[in-house]
Figure 1 (tube, rainbow, N blue to C red):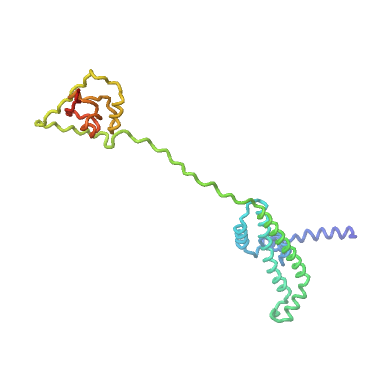
Figure 2: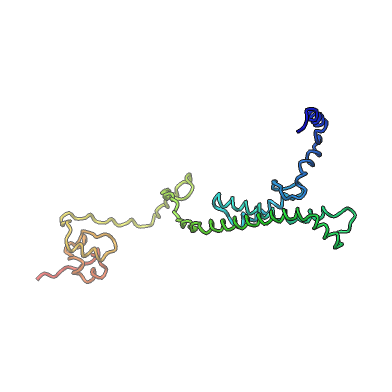
Length: 262
């Protein structure tokens, strides 16, 4: 057990040695335990390339296409496991090189063999870390495969239904400039004969619909005409009883046919 004088002496000596004070000295001191990189907790060490870690992450995510948070977590573990495996392989070389004396030729068998003997304890710890990392990597990979196998089948999107857009009703106004004047009707020729006025319809005949009028309308393309007599020949029978009018499908205005009365 330390005496009181020894405790006081240790306290005085501790005040004289406070460790590195500059930023570079503190950074170097904080990395004293990372000489081999075996127990490094940082994802990217100062001598490693962050772009390599980022490229590895993108490659794993594009290959597995995670859909759930659990799948993303397992993929992150796989990325970390492969990056650690690469670090451990580089650390093995650094451990062996650190055991070679300065000025010795590393190509000599005796120098390399002695370096492996001196680094046997560090290499043993490194191998145990590599084995544990390899088991964790394959365990996460198997779990990820199970999650991907339990994914629901991909449902394709429903087919698109084309709905016609509503169209504007046609404009009843005539096509053309709205302010353009209407063309004037051509003047009648002075020598052209005046149109012959049609005679007024007689009111003496019945105007009600009969079977004859409906049959006469079947011969026409125009709407049926209820009149079944010739204005110029009131004694003309219906069109079906006249050979001339039966051919043209209506009563001709100038037909002189009259039935023979016995």
